Image (cartoon, rainbow, N blue to C red; front, side, top):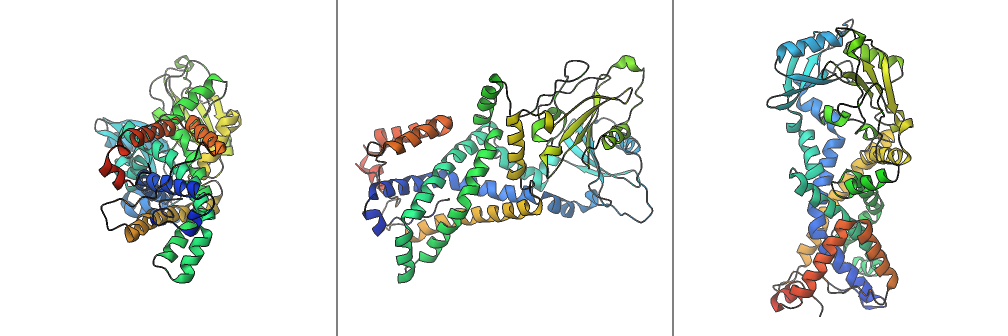
Length: 467
C-alpha cells in the first residue's frame, strides 16, 4: 500500500483498544516510509506505464521513421541490401544489430554505434532507403527506461530505487495490518459522513488489492538492482546456479556478451543477458559467405520466434547471433550463433539450457513487464500502474486535508513493541538480513531517532516522537 491510510494524523477508536501500541507504531512507520517510497513509486508507475505502451506510443510519435507504406505486391529487399544502405548513409558508424520489422507496415531497425553515441537507423524494407535515425535514449520510452532503472542518476539513482523498494515492502505489510485493524473505524467515519472518509476508504481498498501485486513487482525487480541483485548473483554463482544463462560457447573463448553488443532499445531476453558469444573460424574461408539474411534463414529453419534480432559480427572472428525473443513466452527464448564463413550453427542456447533460478527469474520478468499472459497481463499491469499512481496522490492528499494547524508534521505517535512481540522482532531482523539496504537504512533511522530527535525539543515536537 502507499502513503495513505496512516497519514490522517488522528487516532481512531480501533487504535485505542487492544493492540493500540502496535497499530500506532505501524501507522507511524507507514507514514514515514511514504516520504521516500511515494515519489519513487510514482516515477516507477508512470515510467512503467509508458514502457508498457511503447509499441503503441513510439510509432505515433515517430511515424515518419517507424511506419512505411505497404502496397499489395511489394516485396521486401534483402536485409543485406538494407544493411548496405545504412552503411552508405553512415559510413563512419559501426552497425551492431538488425531487428526485423514487427509488421508489414513497419520499418527495419539497425542499431549503430557512432562517435556521438548509439543510434537507431530506420530503413524502408520495400524501397531499401534510409528513413532517418534517432538516439534511443532520447525517445519517450527510452527516457522512461532510464528513469525506471536508475532515475537518470547512475549508481546513486539505482541505490535510491533499491532503498525505496525495500521500504515499499514495509509500507505494504504495515498497510495491510492497518487496513484490517482499522476497518471498523473507517466504517463509522463513512456512516457519519466525516470529511475525507470516502477517500480514506478508497485508498485502503485500492491498497488492499494492489499490495500483493506491489510485493510481486518489487521481488521480481530486485534482480535488476545494483546491490541486492549483484550480491545475490554472486552468491548464486558460488553455489552452482545463476540468475541468467551462461552459454559455454563453441569454438573458442567468448569475445563479448550479448547485452554488451546490443543497445537497450533491442532487448536481449533476460536469461541470455550475459550469454557468452563464440567466435567464427576465419580459416573456414578467406571472405564472409554468410550474411544477415543467412542468419535469419537459419533462425527461421530452426524455429526461432519472430521478429528476430541479429547481432552482427564485430570482426573477422565474430558470429551472427540470431536472437528469437519470445515476447509472451520466455520458454521459447533461444539464440543461434551462426558462423560468418560457413553459415553453420556453431552453438545454440535457450530457455531449456538456463539454470533453474534463471528460468524462474525469466518468467518473473515477463510478468513484471506485463507480457507473460498476453492481453490479460497487459491490462492488469496497466490497471496496477494507474492504481499505484492513485495511491501516491491520495495518500499525501489525505495528509494535507488533515494536517495539524500547529508547527508539526502530524505524524502518528507510536513505538514498535519489539520486546512484547518477539515474532515482530524476528520479522524485522529477517527482513533486514534479506534486504541489507533496508537493514542499513533502518539502523540509520533508529540511530537518528535515539541520538537526535529525542534529544532536541523542537525536533521531538515536529516529528511527534514518543519519549
